[in-house]
Length: 160
Picture 1 (cartoon, rainbow, N blue to C red):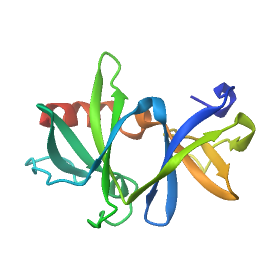
Picture 2: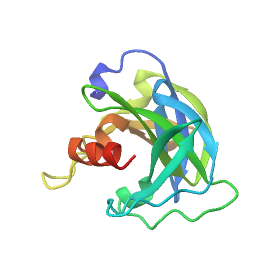
Picture 3: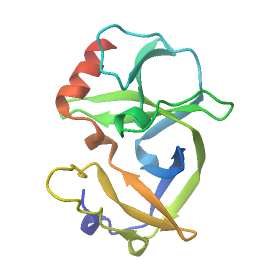
């Protein structure tokens, strides 16, 4: 989804990874959980921390900081798991994403959102819906369906 297709006010859940503020469309967020123990699964990608039991369902948990080339998420009192619905094409899977802290839900008007920066041809920024501006601070709007490639998602779904 490009910025041009954002034509109405949308609510976004904002959260922090390191010092940066990211956001997901609240329509994709199922729930927010306190950090709980995560069961490690052998031979999974480095950014996959493991799985949790969510009311009888096995949900893979990923560390977005690692996926984005940052240091691993350290567990603090504010660390949480954002459970989101991710479109794999023919099915929707639940995916837990570690966040340093959840901020708030903000409404953003289309005019508050700019296109994602184009950083040459070597870096893929397709997973960024746009750059929101809230209270004079940039918020990186993620397209959770594009953060992970199809092969990565298939691997996560198999691990779960």
